[in-house]
Length: 100
Image 1 (cartoon, rainbow, N blue to C red):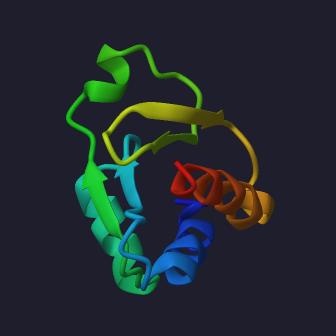
Image 2 (image 1 turned 60 degrees about the horizontal axis):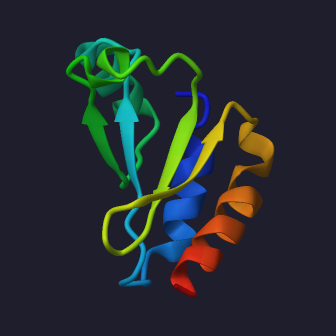
């Protein structure tokens, strides 16, 4: 949940861009805890709850961000990182993907 405000800033930046979709998947928090946190910290981004997929594929570094092209092909993957630079780092990759 620590990175959610930074992701919300990224959502805000690309809100009106029809070529960009940003979705978060919460793999850690129990649904009720996430719901309570979101009530106190409103976000308007899509947040999905993981059903075990992350563990099934061996994902162990969080946050991990996938960047998919228009065809749904994984083009970039960022692991770890800090929320402080998230918008800048992610924007650069998003803009690169939009050129394809």
